Image 1 (cartoon, rainbow, N blue to C red):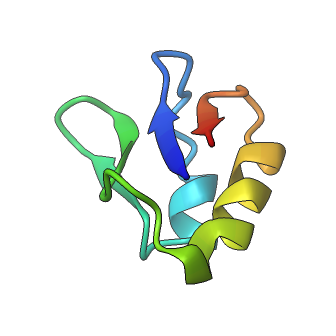
Image 2 (tube, rainbow, N blue to C red; image 1 turned 90 degrees about the vertical axis):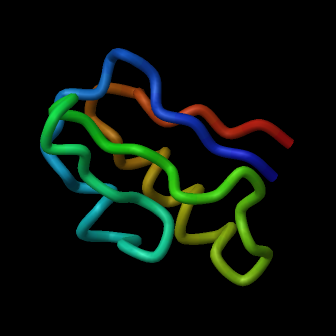
Length: 63
């Protein structure tokens, strides 16, 4: 599974708070970034939750 952040990111950092192992906030770009090309299997559920809870629908999940 892969995840990416689109330009719709509002920078509210909810994904960073929910799953700091995967999401990191870029202070220069003022948006979150994904730390991995492939999401580790043990973190897939929490990444899906972050995508579901993203108010801007900025997290895209690719199977």
